[in-house]
Image (cartoon, rainbow, N blue to C red; front, side):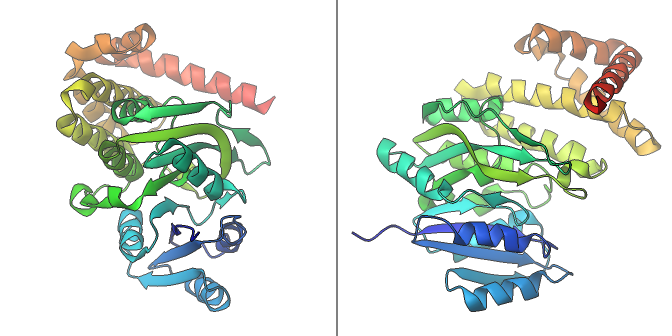
Length: 328
């Protein structure tokens, strides 16, 4: 019996030092019928040479070179090029365990679902390895529960890279994605795909290795995009979601506004002050919906709206205490 093809899409921008590790982990997958489509998104380092060498040596690797357009444009180009019945994603500086995609497909087939997903572990620059959950629980999701879990962001996170999707779910995706959004675009894409799926299955194992490095997204300084794109993503979802999901979507927006304000509270600079005022105004406009939050978050939201200086003082002290504890 012929195996269905899995297409793995890898957007790559200036990833030359790390791409071999990523590609080797994909070529080592136990699932044989797998194609690896790497989209070189206008890299200015040796990414093109690395990809061309791999494509010349390995028939399962396809190297596609394009002008820089951002990670969303690279992923969408990969979807257009894919021939598989199933589509997955990997970032060019991460790696996956050998049985990850075989296991995800096995779960999808066993449960008859259109999305199969799992957890991940974080590899820190200092050598620490931190699994995100890893309870081993297997969770079936219908359309609404899958979307609620995604919006909640607790057990199930928003990365595309821990998921395997039926190809048909991508129909119409390009018109949904806003090319101006540079941060949290994976959350928006995931929402579209989960909204089209009738069911999903999640297993809380961690075969995806998210490798944190100096210069990676988590180490970049704040920017307007990093603050306001995630807010805009949640606004889009709130504006377009089913009525049954309205409270979940608004709660996700409120939590993100709190997180954005907290980020801005421990940074200085005129831009940061302006952004902080803008986020505070957005939060104040949502004041009627604060009861959707936990009691703790309601208190924090009220502090930001009424005495923002007290929130910044308290949060700054918390961050310093946490940093001291991390050093011991």
